Image 1 (cartoon, rainbow, N blue to C red):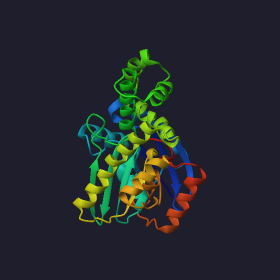
Image 2: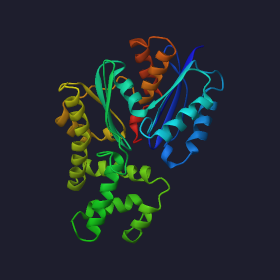
Image 3: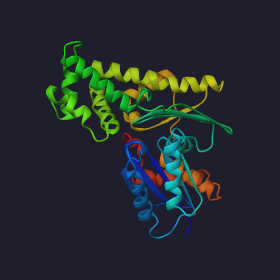
Length: 315
């Protein structure tokens, strides 16, 4: 049986899948995010994933969507070397947002807005690709789950010392962090993976927004404006003001964020496949097949049946 392997990794979670030529899922692996900026543990995790997935048969092609690829040269080189060490078959290492774009549009023109731990837009129009955002948490990733979490901590701290009045919001943030005022700094600076821990706070902010908390809604509205800037810039730069857009990443599980994004950007197209589906679609093409509508339908149904949709959680 001919198989292909696709992997999608964000800042928090990794999903890797083996599928046959008809789009049927044969095996999957779920693990932590392969963030190259938090050390090299991800390299051994990748080896473990491939060993498990390929125990019965080696794939004929593999595509990995990895965070920071193409953004930081040293990290990209390590990612390519790691992939080369575990795959004998033809393989590609791509940015995780590019494979999400491939999944959403499967070769058609469009721009994919990813809002998970980080934020970025990736557009493909014909043979042209364009990306905006994705500059990382130090001075970018505006509107992302990390950004929301950091801003939530800022709003909570401003409430604690009396600069603003948002007691319900601040109390919810402290409860989510499992601490009180005296321990907030220790929590904030004591996280093993601050990027993932801050991003996880966005779930609580979304819940507060759904419960009509004004502070949470204002924060998410600001996030949507920042996210929308990515799409607006792409449409302007490509001179395609009506370019179709789609989305991926856990933030879009928030009905409030999706509603606000629709108002700002117009109605999105539902992704044809989740990000890991984009990696599998590219892998099938790399193997020399033409993954058409039947492959996409079968793969999408298999992923949904197994609940293997990475956008269902913040990543």
